Length: 132
Image (tube, rainbow, N blue to C red; front, side, top):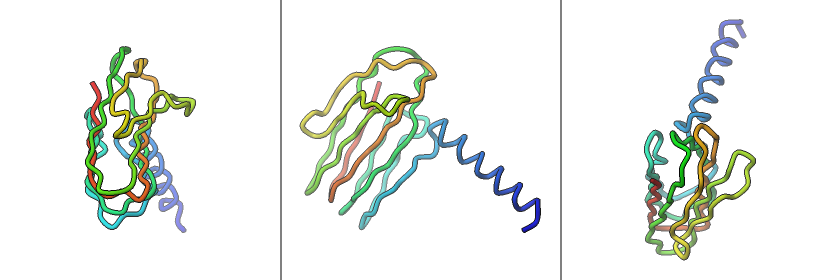
């Protein structure tokens, strides 16, 4: 390989990391028959419609203000289970939401990194997660 190819790949890796760190590039490790979703990069909403989904999606959240944020999880499932987690920068669960516990509050710190994880277990249906 030429040196400029290696430089290009290194710059591309740095760009992907910056996009992930800023919350614009979610990381998916899942399988599904169909999946149409939006992890809400730059917004306060994540939603998807899916069939036979297994696995998870992870995204970084950064809040512009230090204040309590209320998360609300709504969904319609034909089968399986979908859970949403908000973890702090040390990967400790701050909030766990599902259809039986659809809302909760975290006290976020401005600029601190949080993680939003959506887990699917043989799930078919749709969900919407909002925070304000």
